[in-house]
Length: 157
Image 1 (tube, rainbow, N blue to C red):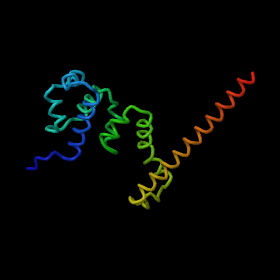
Image 2: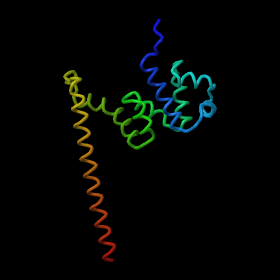
Image 3: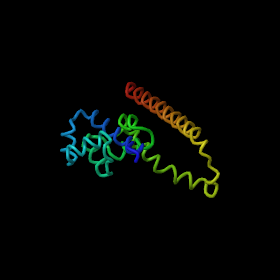
């Protein structure tokens, strides 16, 4: 029998351990808030037992991290990325994007969806990121220009 926990089990334990550590709370405090036994939380953080979905949610909520955002980002990237961005507008944007993009791609490609190649994913991600960066830069420039116009108008009054 293989005694090494599966990769996902280990990744979840690492995420939860990081969230508990970053929260600055003790395992006992987290267990109390999550309404779980102290030993259950300790063994989960040590990857000695697999956490259930309700336990993952309860522990993340007890640490103050958005369970949905944090867990999703951990699954997509890793625990460090998830904890560093959980609860932010960026995390919410990425979550909404990951929910919307499969449907949008399927609708746009229609029957051609079978033509997609996995090797295109990284380049497509870079293209999307560049497009978003340009869009945000344009919005910031417009906002600065509007702010300058408003400032000039108020100074003239």
